[in-house]
Image 1: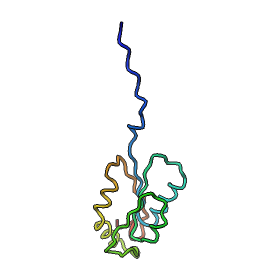
Image 2 (image 1 turned 30 degrees about the vertical axis):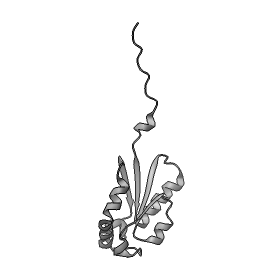
Image 3 (image 1 turned 180 degrees about the horizontal axis):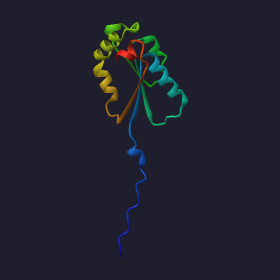
Image 4 (image 1 turned 120 degrees about the horizontal axis):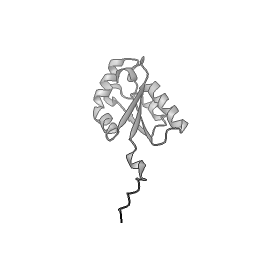
Length: 119
């Protein structure tokens, strides 16, 4: 008797890519909030990064990273992209840990302020 072919796998969730959306700065954080609030992206992870601690505390993202704690003291970048770059460099290890294990990372940020532009 001929061998029966194996049934196709039914555990497709195991093959799903790990997708991360990172909202950087005020505009990126707002975009991230809108995506989280929509509820239209099941299976997508969200992370907010900001130098402004007050803005970050209002984020809907389940993971939040305050970047540049020493450089900005949680007060933001004052529209200075160099301050945003310094903040990101200071927090590089935390940022790397946040993206670790992701297959695809989308970064959303506004270009014009300090954190999103510089980081």
